[in-house]
Image 1 (spheres, rainbow, N blue to C red):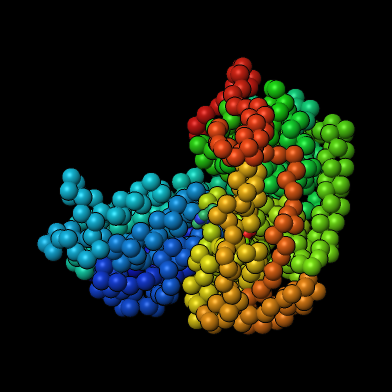
Image 2 (cartoon, protein in one colour):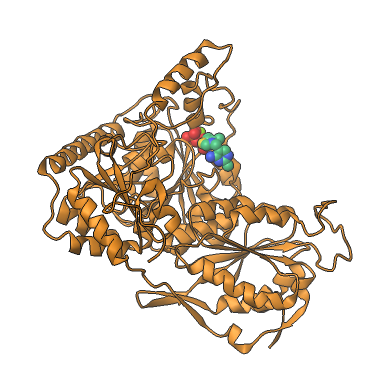
Length: 619
Ligand SMILES: Cc1ncc(C[n+]2csc(CCOP(=O)(O)OP(=O)(O)O)c2C)c(N)n1
Ligand SMILES: [Mg+2]
């Protein structure tokens, strides 16, 4: 079959399917893009010709369209994504931030940036970077560190193996992230003869990897010996649809469960074993138990510094880790006993092997008491009736109350992710979507669009700070144009409140964190075509949320909150270094406090013994 190098992948992508647990569906929803001279005649032509196979959607910003793909992929538990096409130069590099976000969060996205001429005939073409020392370099080399697979198609024939490699990486839960296929603008328009089989429907099956029996046996031995075991549930629990298995294990054994940002909602907040958020933005319940835990079972977590409170969270001198993860890279962290496996199979196997085992009732009671005390504290915070302006906690509480059991909250950066992590009462494993791997300001609107495209039956509440909004509001116009319903809660606090608080904590008096003056963001959202509701009080905010739920298309609910009415952090720490010398005394005081806090920081390097040694690699 003779096709252009751009037509071949368009037809190939439309034919890719994914299957897990016997359920099969198309892998690529559609294609997002922005055209320029680099992709117009190649991919642009191919997408126009094959609109029936791979529908095209116009984005407003290339970074944002990658966020749409990432939001979609996360909501689909990584079993689907979008392709994204750009021109060369700035269009391409605009996607680098999106690629980093996807790779860090282990989410599949396929990026198709154009590249400068393979023939080099018109070099330097408009927007081409020239490197005097290396003729093979282009700006697309910036994708290499942020992609799990990178290829540049310099000869037409390369498109066939590159497309297959791309699919292998995108659909492998241990490998997945951004995949970048850079397509020189001349090569896109050239022809290639592809085998017919290349274009036929192809199913990528995600097989669930069972734990190695020996690894499981050693994990069971460690857990049975433990006096104070604790589970840390990460995003992998949700992606593997292992939340029922987690609940069953927790119920059978009484082991309490703390949740990372990506793992939030793995258990409903009212589950008897749920301690809620853990780590730097954790609850006192989870953080107190973490401090004393002697065996920590990390499931599907990459152990970010927020989860470990910068390695200060776990203070038992002999604490041991058992890590269940599909990726050996993550399983091996903290000298853990590695159980390289699918989370669901591993949790089910653990429950079988631990039959009859129950944790010390004293530990279980302590977990229940702490969780109950925290539940009461949440209730106090979200109904505080702060005046004259409401607190952010009240705003979160009102959104939580307005959201139905299956609705989704989306957030990414600022002070809200920490507050949401602590305060949100989770009811559904897909109801909490805070992007905190890259914590990228600007993810909120496009990420929320991706969630809505993946789950149209759920109401999507996007919580966005004024700073994040200003950074990337343009996709609101896409949501308006494409009729993508979002309830955007735009929280005005006149600048970067989170960084302002951090600045105070290092003695720098909120330097550079205020807007002088704040722009009228409600008017801005209106100008992009969104319906806007302005709420002055928490009561007005509640009724605006109800009106927003009833509306069609994206609705922005604008509310101002008291910048200084923050939710405290509970028994945790985050390593933000403070200047060793400064003219300001407040910095010196902060440095002294920093050095004191840092004493709690540890490296988790466990001694090995025949029964507890680290077991690396795949079975
Ligand atoms: C793209 C990007 N740039 C910078 C940062 C660092 N940063 C984290 S939060 C924040 C301020 C966010 O302001 P806003 O959205 O208004 O939320 P607030 O802190 O006021 O709650 C900044 C600058 C970031 N996370 N992402
Ligand atoms: Mg702000």
